[in-house]
Picture 1: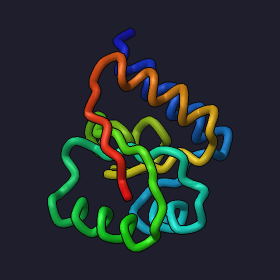
Picture 2: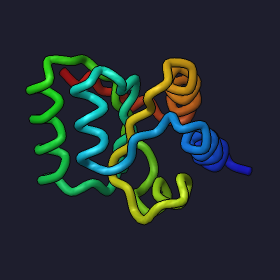
Picture 3: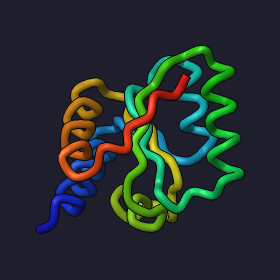
Length: 113
C-alpha cells in the first residue's frame, strides 16, 4: 500500500466519522462557520473553481491550512462520492494527522486567509 493510499483510507475514515465536508458549497460553509480545520484541494481543480474558493475563504476572515493532494476522482472515491475537487476536514485530530501524513510525501501547504 502506498503512502497516498494510506492517506486516502484515512480520509475515508474521517468521512465515516462524519468529519468531512465535501463539495464547494459545503466546504465554504464549513470555513465560514469556523468548522473547517484543514482543506484538501485536488491537484486537478480548475483554476476558476480554485479562484472562487480562495475568494470565499478570504471573505470569511478565517485562516485555514490547505494542501494540494491527489485528484478529484480519487478524493471522491475515498469518501464514497463522485469526483470532489475540495474537502474540508472538520475535526482537529483528523486534520493534524492528515497534515502530517501529507507533509511526509508532499509539502505543498498553503495558508488560506
